[in-house]
Length: 112
Image (tube, rainbow, N blue to C red):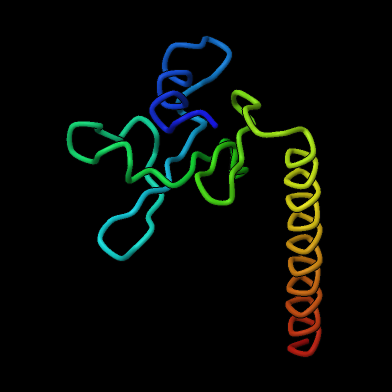
């Protein structure tokens, strides 16, 4: 699997990627924080602290579980598993959002 440094450099130097669309998930003490790609400073925070990269809210590279949609350096079988997991998560999120909208709508109707 490619390293976080490989992914970082690819995002910077490959014109098909816009760094403004990426977030970096990293360890900060015992916490995990998301940092806009362009605010990350490799001299302040070491590359081994990077846990994942997100592109428009989708994890495209992760140390654990191993995900690599940038280089495709994980097996095709694992890649399909990852895509299915992400599809299910999106589906679950949509259901939750729908329930919240319905709940809000019901509250608004009760106020009338």
